[in-house]
Amino acid sequence: MIAGVQIHSREAFQAQSEILTEGALKFIAALHRTFESTRQSLLVAREAAQQRLDAGVPLDFPAETAHIRADPSWQCAPPAPGLEDRRVEITGPTDRKMVINALNSGAKTFMADFEGACPFYTQPENIS
Image (cartoon, rainbow, N blue to C red; front, side, top):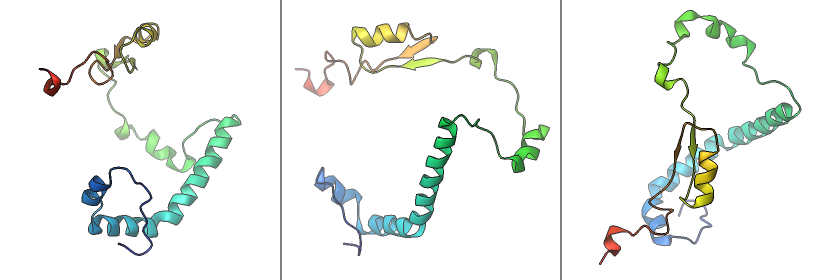
């Protein structure tokens, strides 16, 4: 094992031992040791930003990057007509309640999981 690295999960131990090789663990440990203080600082800043937004302060871009947003070379063409409104409701299982919610969502289309979430779906290897 790598000094200071502990794996607390007991799930899928065999898969963990195949994926979390010594090289992978060394890499993860190096990332953690290098960037953990930055990661923690960013999490604190993120919480502070969320509190400001919750208090009603509007979301805005930094003033020091205004010249980039004003530069016309950074503008792109408008979306094609078929892409202007692509609202999609993504729903899970295909039970009645989920389909009704999707149809009532106001979206132009909806996606549903007919394979994994449907109780009537049978895996091909289970067909006899």
